[in-house]
Amino acid sequence: MGRTPGPRSADGARPSVALGIAEALAEDFARRAAEVDEAGVFPEENIAQLRDSGLLGMIVPVEYGGMGCALAEFVEVAQLLGGACPSTAMLWAMHCQQVAAVVGHAGPELRRSLLPEIAGKGHLLASVTTEPGKGGHLLTAFAGLAPGADDRLNIERDAPVVSGGLHADGYLITMRSVADGPTNEVALAYLPRAGADIDVRGEWNVLGMRATESVGLRITGTIAEDNLINGRTGFREVAVSTMIPMGHLAWASVWLGAARGALRWVVGLLRDPRTRSGGQLGSDLFLHDLARIRLRLDVLSAYLHSCLSAYESLLADAAGGPARFDDVAFQLQINGLKVAVSEGTFEAVDAMVKITGLRFGYARSPNKPLERVFRDLRSGALMYANERLLIANGKLSLLDRRVRLAGDPAEAGAVPFGALAP
Image (tube, rainbow, N blue to C red; front, side, top):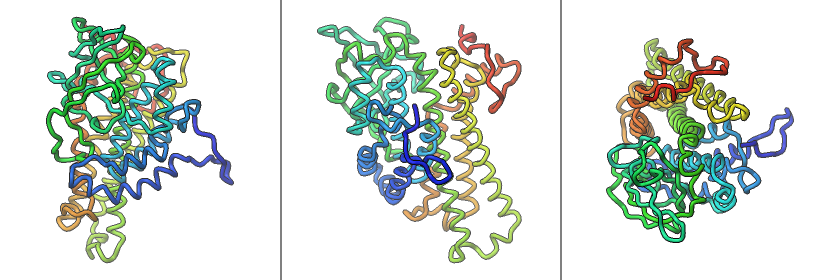
């Protein structure tokens, strides 16, 4: 994922086109955030602007018409959008996670046909990984691919949660490789919306992230074998090297952006003599609490960028092959990123509600965002439950005898986490 070429500024730095676009869009998204949250509806205007702006093709390589942006820019844009409308930002970030899987692992035919559609027409991708009886567990599937007519493959899939699924132009769907095969032999299939039958199963009336419209769907359709990403049994490589790290970086960036946006609002509130309490800024306890909030977000930001750097290093080390992503320390860190940021940003906004009180922190008002962001961030620990990741990390911790921490230099020859499998 190379960086888009562009003019350099006077100091030699190259400004980011994507960041400039995101800054402009964020202003519009912020104005609509309370409205789409209150109604619990898909943010159609926001997604239309993302389509028109080219940001849905942000990480599509330039050769396919995309921006070809680097991961560092992706993380920054996710934070900008997250600070404006977390629901919209999460839909965009999850779309980009799916795009990364296509860019990194799809066959040449699918890349040539799909990536220009994403970059040029703004096709939106949705992720279909949840399934009744297993939740969102990524590396297993119950519903199996079935042979169809003319060497095509039939897909029949129930999914209790599909973010933006009713509005997507295509789906990346986890399926058991064959109907009677092991549940851990998983394929990732691309099904275009034009070739799918979609039935809604359930509604989306929830506490936060309301505008993601993550309804349950039953999806049926047929695909060619070329629409399997990394073949019949190659999904684990896709998941470990791309979907898991990209997903956790994307989610963490959106959550951190939402909390940063909330803190910017609080700081503005406190600096305005019309809204701050006369005794607040003279209170040591108040200043202590405000400093704790800022410190928490600084630590989470440092952890995010440490994991980003580690992932970039693994991507750059092409000679190491897919096994490099099995490194125990990296798996501990990328899983820990999701847990730490989902919990830490919620705790930070909870503390902001406390210090701003009933009038500003707890009030429901389009001009007072803390209550809405509080509800949005509560969802983070529930998306691929933190308990599941912590149990996995507890097992992984037993393999890392040297206790290599985030930010430590990468190490060759680390024990793969597959060694823990029964």
